Length: 259
Length: 151
Image (cartoon, each protein chain N blue to C red):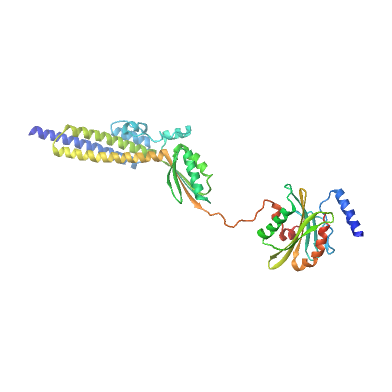
């Protein structure tokens, strides 16, 4: 009876210890955000708290998720930039066209020629995605579609957000492994239920983090370009305009005012 | 007879000099010493009616039918003039052309615009006359005569 009680106490201590470790990790992350530490310092600090050294490039090994930017291959400058920074590029153009069908067809052709794909298409415009390294080239080609009335280009640096998500995922995965090991060791039904409940919670949290990382990676790798078209119908009245300039100078006005 | 002799001598002298377009203006018109662009010849009446002539390059060598229709369309469709009359015309030198008389209104006043066209080879020779209708109408006969002296 005494031995069983000691086993249960030991089990509870382990569980409490793990939960404490997780809380300390979370608290450190929040604290780090609040102080707006630099990305590198934040990573180092939380790496130490988690008892290991974690960096952005090591995310793939720790989390099992392919790092952003690895799918989009482009210019050297772009490659240099993305190795250091994770940037989400988006562009919104408002354009005037006389023929919506033609404008849509040309937009799709540009998207495809850049290795991209159409995400959404409608009577007001089109949304397509292109590899991030083709973003600027695509914006130049867009000018061929029609007259640009307005445009907004946004580049959002998500390096810190991306790195933080990766670190949090790594920590949760390690915690999950430890919980699973603890669960495998067995124990009282009550303890096992408590561990199982914690495993479910952490698993759910991991899935949520993985989803966020996948979404962010998609945004980084594939730039989003939105084109809104204002259709201006062609003039129904046609000016009589023969290509002989002297014809236009005929009439009383020129005759009476030439001095 | 004397008039014909005068005109012939004038034609010859000008053709020898390679001068710009010339006409013998109606009696109540005075030829300006220097014509203002785009004209090569300008004359004005005491009532401020105008007579002018100019040369247009015609590298496509469009014929009389083409340019007659083009002028008619330009004046009627593009400028809103009304065609009053049209008729064939021939200069004393033998240029064959067509004459159009158009009417238009400006600030409640009706104007007449008389234009004659002579496509000759790769050139088009134009004469234009215009003014307020009530002032130009009495001059029409004299202007038509003047146009025949174009050379």
